[in-house]
Length: 148
Image (cartoon, rainbow, N blue to C red; front, side, top):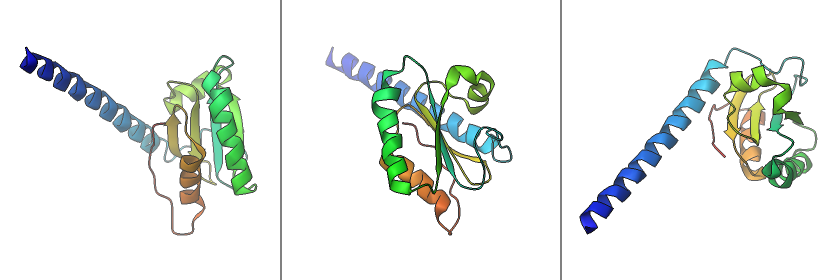
């Protein structure tokens, strides 16, 4: 009886880890596929890194957690980075192209408009600062994806 329970717990744990790993792999592949594309052309000015948050009208986490985190980010970076929020329903093609599955979602891209990070779910200010910091340092750009 105890062995069966342990096997079930182990199986569920393995399944969760496989799903999580699959999502991380899929996100990284999405970011790599966008390496030569600039999907935000015309929506956000180029010339400096940017953070774009996708939200929906009924998303409580967007309004009570992600918006304050973006406000703290704006206060910390002093206009070195463009920060804007888009309604996901207004940009269905862009949401599909980026692989956004949930709101909130944030996308960080470099000064040329190339996507460097896609965050599904809430992402706090320190993570966004780290992602933006990687783009503003002179020692280059590191491409990563962090699930929120």
